[in-house]
Length: 121
Image: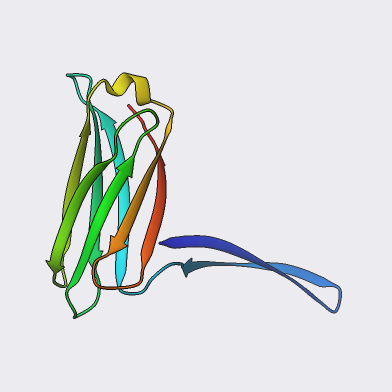
């Protein structure tokens, strides 16, 4: 995603900085993760997957939480669109502040995307 950067220059003894935003990552797919604690005590992790290309994309997504079985979801033939996958983890209070790991494996392709997220209220 977009990352702010600062470039520092020293030209003939004059120093100055330039601020820019740099787009990091893949140019055809974007993954965003959020988490929240529901009133029933479950942590809900939402994975927003956006296909920025004109070719369909398919991913198998696995969410790993400490001390838990992995959760699996699939996105099949996502066109140039955005979709949201939801993972519901019961007894979520135990996970607050802990790191969760999402692995998105491209189905029929070579890519494996890895993301981490700290479970939040």
